[in-house]
Amino acid sequence: MPSPSAGASCLVTGASGFVGQRIVQMLLEEGLSELRVLDKTLSADLLETCEGARGHTAVTVLQGDICDVEFLHKSCRGVDLVIHTAAIIDTVGKVSKETLIAINVTGTEKLLEACVQNNVRHFIYTSSIEVVGPNTRGDPIVDGNEELVYESNLGFCYGQSKSQAEQAVLRANGRELQDGGTLATCSLRPTYIFGEGSQFLLLHLDQAVLNGSVFHRISRKEALVNPVYVGNVAWAHILAARAMRNPDRAKKVAGNFYYISDDTPAMSYSDLNYALGKELGLGVEDRLAMPFPLLYFVAFLLEVASVLLRPFVRYVPPFTRHLLILLNTTFNFSYRKAQRDMEYKPRYSWEEARQLTMAWMESVLPQRRKLLSKKK
Image (cartoon, rainbow, N blue to C red; front, top):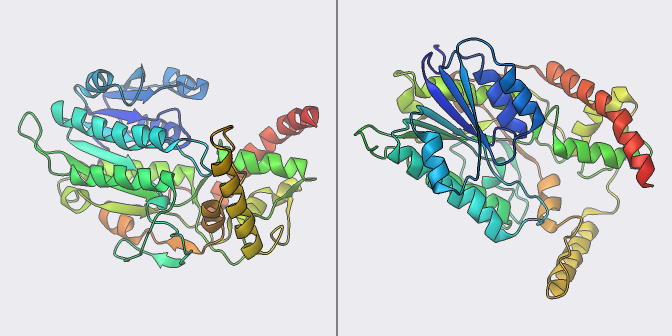
């Protein structure tokens, strides 16, 4: 299959992010005429990647706000493809609902409008498994697919905001552009993403260091999920871009969403941490700190305390009922539809992904141990 197209111009939002940077790295291999990278804060790693770009791709660095309409119009002018990864991720309620909606929903809507006004023909959205659930009852999904009917009944702002944004993206498919052309959109829903640079994995690593080199047990062993390596998530975006520009596949992909997973074995979140860290001498606790129903009740009390204290001080609970359900519900999905429609196949095997992630963990461990020892 051809590349997204030699001579094409692509804009990546959230380019300094965990997934965004990997997409940028892969796009630089694709033979684009121009790559525009956009973020509110530009990381040193992203700038280094852009400075090291070789070949015929001109790289333009754009720093600005996803809610700035004029900035978005300037960023989209002359672009063929937008890959929209920019979003605020929140799992415990640190970010206000207003901010989540402003960035994740309104920002996406403004970007879509800028695409229509500036004749951008292809738009790929980085969604999340949390647009599906788990729901507030913790109903499981095993080997789920895009045709599955699931009562999402989302009870947390982040999932709600990503769902609303995804709906806006899919509704925009087929909109007429200013020049009479048509906008084609699709959405990718990765499962839990791991890999080098993961802030969630870094947090768990810090907790393990403080816990005598043992990961806390945050999920029951039987709560099987299928994590996906960050390199495979980025690769799925590249293949979606290729498919959208391929006349034989474009009609299949446009207007659709896809679950993105890989061949990482199904396991709990805690057992993933252990699988990645055991060769570094890191263990994992055998069981949750207390039975799940009791943990759930404690989370409820913490949420009540947060509400009662709100007039006086902002208190963010260390964990919530939503987070407990998320971490302790069997929730896994197949990538068969992506394989069929866009020829998606993981670029990295589970063993390659594990080795790469483990090497990164090994490189940061001494620094984390030194830093955390000073805080004790």
